[in-house]
Image (tube, rainbow, N blue to C red; front, side, top):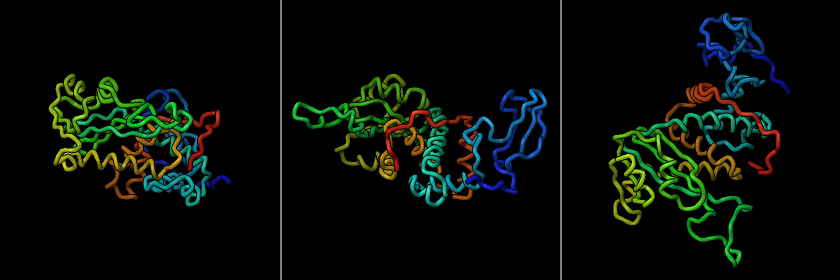
Length: 295
């Protein structure tokens, strides 16, 4: 059932500075449609709203409905919980979730860390259909091709970065490709002395502090990285049934989850929506339905 239009003009908090079609700053108000203020560009004569060209474009739901969803999403509500508390379809809740995470991906991919930067690796299992077994039908032991490797980094200002590298034990090349362009020169890398880090450190000429995982003082030195890794794992545990095609999406969310933890709910809902809309990234559900079921 379609929502009744609100008397309040929706999404005005996003603001409009230029025409999304020609970037002209010359435009005027052109009435209200479906509860949204409409504008007309004086240059190209096309009409638009504050959400044109964003992930919110063409939405039939009100600003309040989206704000309620953001609060639930940022409190790690499952799709079932979003469906029950927001009265939106589970497929819609999943679509909105992916829309937001794709926008966050644009932000994470452009993140540059500086100062003291902790780096580490975490691993997730590949899907059962991709699992490789030995001659006895058992899964390969250790960090094998049955593991998806993720590089994780966080700096002293709580800026975060995480990216899928591939399967198996990370090579020096994989780590270089993952971190290149994301840590500023002059930073100090704090890590667990994993041998794959050495080539990156040498190439970037970065100072580093390292300690083996079995050495005294390891947990204290690596606490910042370990806490961020624990947050990522908690996100994946809460949202069980995540399709392996969406691992990077959920990593993007975990990165923002770390950054917004101190923002109050009233400010958080507008902050997240405004942040996502600013990327001008959108997402449409694929025509071919995925076989992976999520909850």
